[in-house]
Image (cartoon, rainbow, N blue to C red):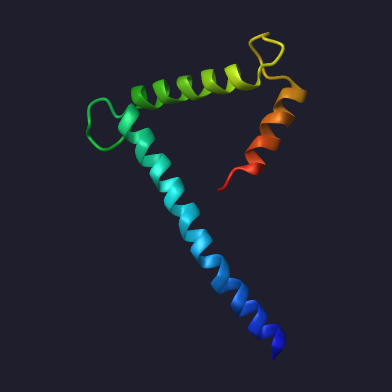
Length: 89
């Protein structure tokens, strides 16, 4: 019975954190839509998606391409993965 109560308590404790993370992700997605939805139709066209991906790729390259060769090598990829694991999902 004690284990059951601990599990329930753990779930109830994590729920507000889950809501905060979901809200944070939704806010980020809304900001991306606002920034890249140039025709303001509430969705990203193929051209808008392409522009967004190019911007995201350029940002990742600027941040993680430490040897400045224009590519992400294995070591740089590992640094990117490590940073991603630290971020809330």
